[in-house]
Image 1 (spheres, rainbow, N blue to C red):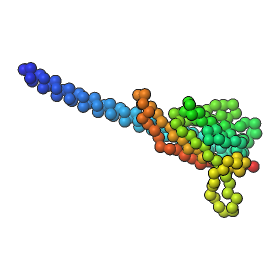
Image 2: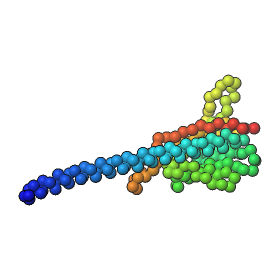
Image 3: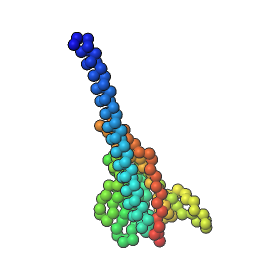
Length: 168
């Protein structure tokens, strides 16, 4: 075996190894991204299920801002509160003294309240600041995750409108 043959074999072997390594890295990154998307979707669905169940059973809206909202509950003393902490990127539910993080890695959260339509047989909503006349709440959020220290995954904007059913 000559030196030229050895150099050609090492060169070809190196190219195959580099191609295989890049394929493995690309596949691992794709699998990590897919896992993140699935986990973010699961977290968003769970948060929406919890919020829908609790808000639909609330007796009324107590106060609302763009990052915090409070409801009255049927028990009267047990208030229901949702708060978005932009610094920690966490959306949390507070109910009966229990703190439950619903969304983590949340980049944006917007809370909007909608008023009742006073026209008979009309079901359109309108944005309001009057908590006494609020009938529906909209939550809009975007979450993201990091892979190897870089923010690579961002889910599309999630939005949900929830009707407050048991109002007085």
